[in-house]
Image (cartoon, rainbow, N blue to C red; front, top):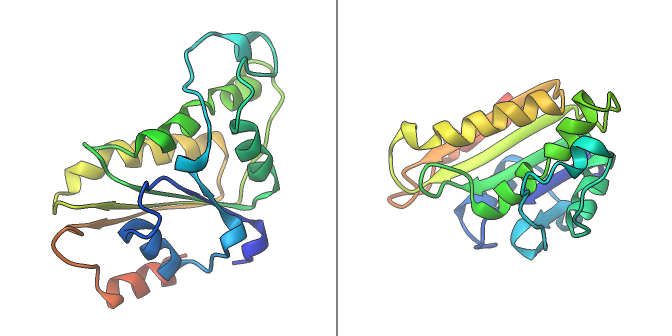
Length: 176
């Protein structure tokens, strides 16, 4: 995969933690390809309907940086630990603001962008599959909105107890 067209949105507040480390084990990522959601100043969508009536958003913040990088990308990798059954709040702020992309596509009939590949890499401290259901649904909705040709939801559970095996990491590498 060509790193120059890859955008990795890291939703972990711990930039040296399990989740980003595992993503780096699976994908060839350069530092310039990483946006840390916790470093971005992105306001939450408040359903004001500006994007329903115009092609813009009432907020002028770092979402513009993310969207500009997304337009250039062929691959988007979302990286987030699971907190209380969902992706982190900083990742969700960015994803919820994708409402303007939805409005642009379906209300204004002005497509924003599509991507070739969408991957979500997620970790959960406990060993329970059910904890990933909300994150997987969000991944599927984002895949549909961006019309991803290839998509994969990659999850590692029980990471508070042990690090995923090299065999499991290699298995994911062969899938992508």
